[in-house]
Length: 562
Image 1 (cartoon, rainbow, N blue to C red):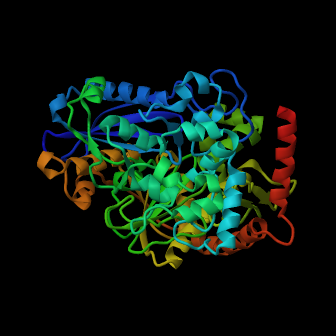
Image 2: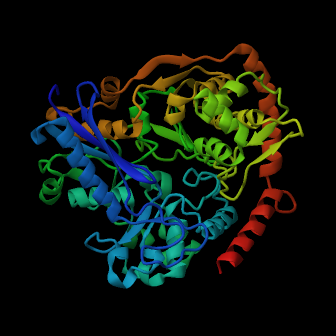
């Protein structure tokens, strides 16, 4: 183990990165990153064909280009012999899916389909399939299946089946020609190993698979739409493998392309945010992972499955072997703060920051830190990118109440931070209501490293000490941990998840503790947030005001593009 290494590949929304990690102690010897050449396609395809509103596509060969570049770079930088690399692990955004042929070639690369938008990768945040998701929800209500563990209380457009239905309805020839419809992460491991296998992480959280009964049966799919009757057998081919296992070994062809030895272990792909669990030193119940970046992810271990109100946790060994993991989060955190800085900050604040030679975040933190909880009289809802829990509705939007002619930018900024902390507390309490004890929080992500002011507000609102993960690349490190598990102890890795995590990841000495006086005030404000949350999120006799506003906006946007 002293001289054995693993590679962790972390695929985000706009780029992919990789790390080379020593199995013995988790030391990162080298890292590299590469943006996707084509980026996100939200307005047009590479050929120039225009895309409708709410579409978000990518080009699949960007992912293999990233893999080749990143692996070669980290091997070159580390000076490690390829004989000492024993495994590769991958994490990927999800559900990010694509149709492929019998040779695993993406359909969008075929000449006849280059102008067909449904042949491309649909990214996790592709929201154009909301109407299909709505129809599935109507069916679940009709059949009294909403509270089934599989479905999370409500189906979102981010899952696989709504996106597949969109393909069927708009371009049935793409559906017919697809030998398989796969998660992008599973597609990569299929390429690397030549094995037709899938990850239970993707299948469980995004495609309703569970350990006991597998996918829903033919009747379920045929009642949603007759064309999906044989969907599982025809388009979801492949054995489902649990996390901690080996999904296959590296083929000779891909070993040559990556500059590695063939036959090394490849672990099942895991959802990118979920890989942060082992990367954040989480190995037992009582801990909650909190990733704070552009959005947030919250995860906690459980002995029992749970699914509802946007919380998913229906698959065992999907993140940590032998445990269920409940997952939710906020759709906008750093993106929300960035929106305010980019669009709402007065010019005089920018000038003041320049004069003080600090960035505008530090200036706002300095000003907002002087305010007491509740002093501004403001309350915000954090739904700038929709709501995941408890309403599972990407069409809900944010709001702020309590503003006057005396309201200052730092007051709004603090209210937005507090709103994201309140939304996090609501999810934490839902976890606890369903039997998950939470004694400590381990946080990761850019905000944890850069913004102590935000972290203190979170500690005050949540009322629990917050620790910070040692690594600033927890997802990539987590994928490396899975690679060490796939390789196994005999090859120089690990046979135990807990031992792998204990040796390969850790937390910083720094902790955030709740300030009692702030905590007491936030308890009052939080109850007000819950009341406002319910009023603005629940449907009444008529569609609520936020949904009516969204409908008006969408109608105008469609007319403008046409």
